[in-house]
Image (cartoon, rainbow, N blue to C red; front, side, top):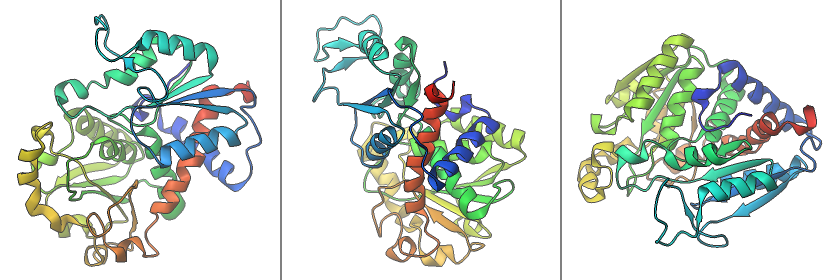
Amino acid sequence: MRHFLTTVDWSRDELQAMLDRAASFRDQPAGQPLAGCSVALLFLNPSLRTRASFEVGVFELGAHAVILEPGKGAWGIEFEPGVVMDGDAEEHIAEVAGVLSRYCDAIALRAFPLFKDWSEDRKDRVIKSLAQHASVPVINMETIVHPCQELALMRTIQDHIGRPDGKKFVLTWTWHPRPLNTAVANSALLIASKFGMDITLLVPDNAYLLDEQFMDAGFEQAEASGGSLEVTTDIEAAYSGAEFIYAKSWGALPYYGKPEQEAKLREPFRHFIVDEKKMALTDNARFSHCLPLRRNIKATDGVMDADYCVALDEAENRLHVQKAMMVELIGKGER
C-alpha cells in the first residue's frame, strides 16, 4: 500500500505513468475501473476545483465519494498524539482513520497550515497522522504541498511545450492583499525540478524564499534530473527567454503568523504582477496559475484572456490526473 502525500516519494517514471494515463483518460472514457469502491474526502478547508474534480473523478471511475467536513457535517477531529481531549474536538484521528479505512478504499484530506508557527506547520503532522493510522491509501488534497496540482501542472506543461527537460520555467511570486500558503509554490518547484526543467524562482526579497526543505529538494532533484534552479529578484532577467511562466502568491516565512509585519514588507512589490509587457520578454511562453486568481492583482485581464494562458487547461487536468492517481493507488480494477 502506498500513499500520495508528496511527489518526493515517487519517481519520475512513476509520475510519468500517471500523467500518461491521465492523457488517456482525457482522450477516451476510462470505463469504471473502481466500480464498487468508495473514497472518503475530508475537507478541513474550503475548495472549489479540488472538491469538484475529486467528486466528479470518483464518480467517473465508478466509485462513490463520501464528502466529510469535520466541524460541520462531521465531528471535529483531534490530530495530536497523547492529548487530553477536553477541547472542541470529539474524535481522535486514530479512530477516524480506523473507521474510514474499514468503510472506504482511500481517504483524501485537505488541511491547510494554521499560520501561527511555521516550525510546527512545516512538519505537516496532520496528514502524516492520518497516514499513520489509516490502513488504506491516503491522498493529499493540499496541506503544505499540493501534489495533485503538481500533476495537473506537469500534464499541462507537456501538453503545450512538450518534453520539459531543459525548458526555462519561471516560478514568480505575485502580490496579494494577504499572505497565503506556500503549498502550490513548494509543489511547482518540486515537480519542475523532478522533470529536468531549468527553473528560475523570482522573488521580490529573500524573505520570500521557500522553506529550506523544499529549496534543498529542488536543488537536489534538479541536479539529479539534469535541470537547474536559480533564484533572482531581477524581473527582466527572469522573464527573458522563459518558456513557461507560473505565478503564485505566498507569504514571507520569516513573518509567518505576523500578517501586519509581513504586509509592510509586501506592500512595495505590487509591480510583480504578470502583465503583457513582462510576457513579451519571454520566448512565446505559456502562462498558468493554479486558481483562484485575483485579476489585475496577480495577473492582468490581458494575460488571463490571452491565447497563451493555459490556466483553465491546468484546472481541467486536475480531473484527469487525479483519476489516474486514484486508479494507481486503489487499482481494484487492474489487480
